Length: 185
Length: 264
Image (cartoon, rainbow over all chains, first blue to last red; front, side, top):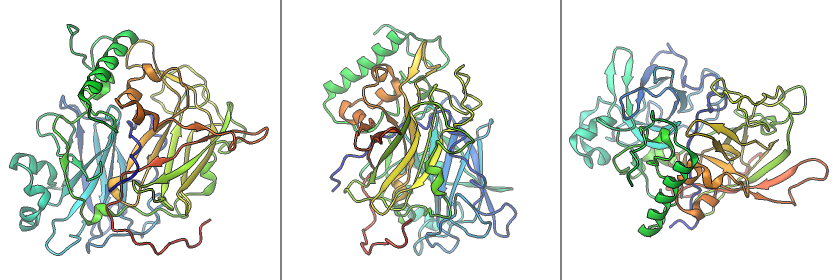
C-alpha cells in the first residue's frame, strides 16, 4: 500500500528538556477542574530503576468519546480541551497529567489513552495504550487485549488510586509493558 | 567473541571496541538478508539502550479511532517567528547561518499539511543550552537552539538556524556525535508520531557513531542525511539544505476536500 519508505526514527536524546516541554504541557485541563482526573505513573528501565529523562505523550478522546480537533495544546487557554498532553519525567521517573476521562469512541468499546514514550537510550519512540479499568465488559471484548496473554494484558490497564489513574511504564524486564506495532511500521 | 557483554555501568570502551561491535552487527545484518528501515531498539554499542529497550516483540495492533487522528495545532500554537532560530535574542548568533527546508509526506506521498514540526540542536560550538550538557564549549548568548513551525498546504517546513557543531558524549572514550538537528513530527494519525535526527552530508563521524549506526541498513541511514542545495543558498546570507521526511502511511480513509483555508 505504501509507496515511500518511512524515514527512520532516532532517540530523543538527553537534551530535549529545553525544547519539547512547555508551560501547561501536562495540564489538558487545569488541576482541580471539576471532572479532572490525574493520570500518572513511573517509567522504569530493565533494572527496575526509574528513568528521569523520559517523555510521555497522551492523545485521547473527550469524555463523550468524540475526537477533538481543536488547536491550542501548546498555548492553553484554560478552557479548550485539545486531547493532547506531554509530560517529561521528574528526577524520580514519575510523570503526571491533569486531564479528563476519555470516553469510548464507539458504542461498547473500551476507552483508553493513546500513549507514546520517548527517552534517552530508547532508539525509537514506543506506542502503547492506557485503558480505563472500569468497564470490564468492554475490556473483555477489546480486540487488542484479547490478543494478549492474561499476564501481559494488565500492563495496559490503568489502576485507580486515591488521586486518579495510575499507569506505570516498564521498558524492559518483569512486567514489561506491551508496546505496539501498527500496520505500516 | 570472547569480550564480556557490554553493560551500561561498565568501564568505558574505546572507539575501536565500539567500532568492532558496530561492524559485527552490520555483518550479521547483511548475512540475514532481511531489509530493516528503522533503528534497532536493542543496540548494545549505544550503551544507554541496554536497559531501555523492550525485550519482547512489539505487539501488532490495528489502530482504533483515536489513533487514526492526530492532535491539531494551529496559528494559535506557533508564532511564525519561532521558525527563525537566529532572531531569538538581541544579537546575531555565531556560526554558519543556514536554511533547512523540506516536505513532510505520508507513506503514500501525500503532504502532511498544517502540522507541527519542532526542532532543537546544539550551537555552532557543539554546546546545548541544557544544564546537563557539561561540554566545555562556549554557550552563545544569542542562540537557544529551539524552533517550531507548522507545515504549509504543501507539507513544507522551513527553518533558519546556525549549523550545529559535533559534540563529545560519554558513551565510550573519545565519543563524538556527528552534527545533527533533532526533529519532532506529527502526522495526520497519532500512529505516525516520530522523533528523529537530521544529519549533514559527508560527516566523518558517521561510521563511528552508534546512534546513527543503530539503523543497520546503509540506505535507511542515508534517509537521515540532508542534501546541500545551492538553489536554497542565498547570496551573501545563508547556506541551504533540503531534507524531506516520510511518515508511516496514514491508516485513515482519506477525504480530499482540501482544507486549504487561510494559509499564512
